[in-house]
Image 1 (tube, rainbow, N blue to C red):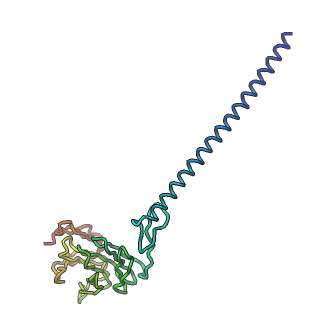
Image 2: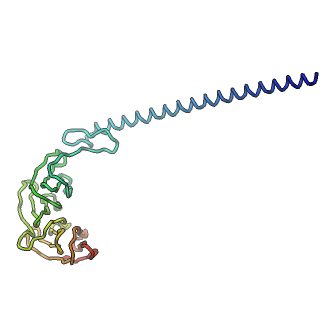
Image 3: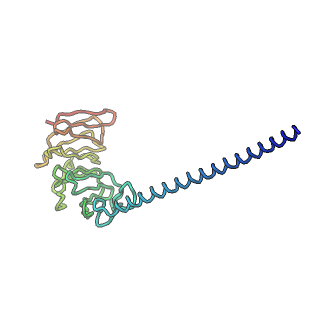
Length: 239
């Protein structure tokens, strides 16, 4: 009868719909599995490439220090240095890159960049350090004045601004770009003093009116910037 035929058609349609839904669900599961497999394969490839890059970095002489390869990380950290200088107040490289200096609360030392050998120059608190143009001399700021060092011999060759009217807690030391002058300034001083490097004679004094702890030469060596608390930045002609 007509009603029976309609019932059969409805049942068939329902069965076909259920089969289609099951097929669609299976296809979705298959696709999800395929995507997961692709993701895992990509992750494995990336991990393999990272391991290869790390191994290459460790094996490369470019990243060796004191006969040891750097740790396996892609930021290429070369080495963690152990020192006995207390709190480090300043670090600086010589212009030729052969040495670097550390100034700390318990001393001053110069290190050979390639070998990692340390030469401790002095004990006591050092607030600042700077190399001259050829890297032969180092000036360090101390509690009273500053000292000039021969980097190769380790000898203290001069003491600056440490007399009857010393600059205290010398936080700023700098050689002029041509190496002709040495600048010294401190936390507890209202002045910066400029010395002739060869004779160690005081050439000029710059009164900032308040204490400061930073200064910089222009590349031509003639213009000097100094900073002081509450008085801002001052520009000086050193000639």
